[in-house]
Image 1 (cartoon, rainbow, N blue to C red):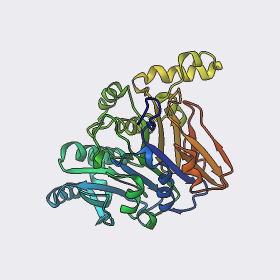
Image 2 (image 1 turned 60 degrees about the vertical axis):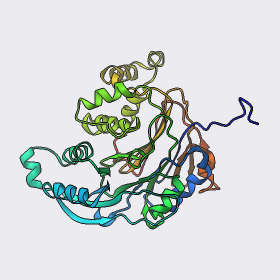
Image 3 (image 1 turned 135 degrees about the vertical axis):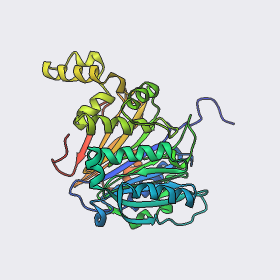
Image 4 (image 1 turned 120 degrees about the vertical axis):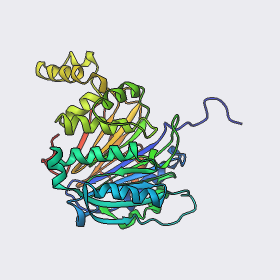
Length: 364
């Protein structure tokens, strides 16, 4: 008999990440293995991964990972892409049949680059055009969904437990300098292939444990700037907020974190004057992008990782270090299973970002 108070209710979802600061490549199997000890934090309704540095032979092209509901939809979408992009490679994403992953869509990838003539005629830059194309396909082409769109990186996700998803996508055959992972435990949104994490736009990917109570306010603001939230989960909006603040507004990663997990006014009042002015400006200028509710997020990007808890640290997250390797996960067990001799383990404070980069070229 279960007695009230003795029933374990996991705090929903599992996240994990690993990065080599020297840029050394590692198999995707390592991140798959890190999710195994956190099996009970998921319920089989979504798992996914993002790998960086995995497509060196196509590093100058955008890798569109896509779901299609039919061959007809794929052909229609491909014809649309050919109007504005050079497609240098088109192929099915390799998978293996396993009993626990079912009802899979057509899973395809294109390596593409926008036609220069199109960019000139529209007077737009490459990244902005790619982002708008992704939004257009996802919002206006039923049965087609771009779930990854960066250079030399890719997301892999499905309905299933994450360790099964890693096997399904043959992640042991990929090598990258950085990996992130997610095991989903949806509480108020449906479990479907497009709703699994990571959520991605260009090189940015988000995996998230928690709930966004400010979702409606965040969504209304971000949709004024051309973003469209139609993937049936609150996490999607985080990806677009990060893209808006960092790519469009030019904020550093630290400033972006100070917007979405802004310090309390009482905390700001105790800061040195220059810091107080900076934080006050960010809170006032981007007040609608403050994310409230319990969360821990991992942001993957070209050249690094960012980890962030909500201001009250209502979701768990630990960091481990050994040599040039940095590990981040919901639970310490997820780190020790892949690095038993981790040298340092610590827990970030609420609202304070942990940023790990390959070099100093990233604007932190």
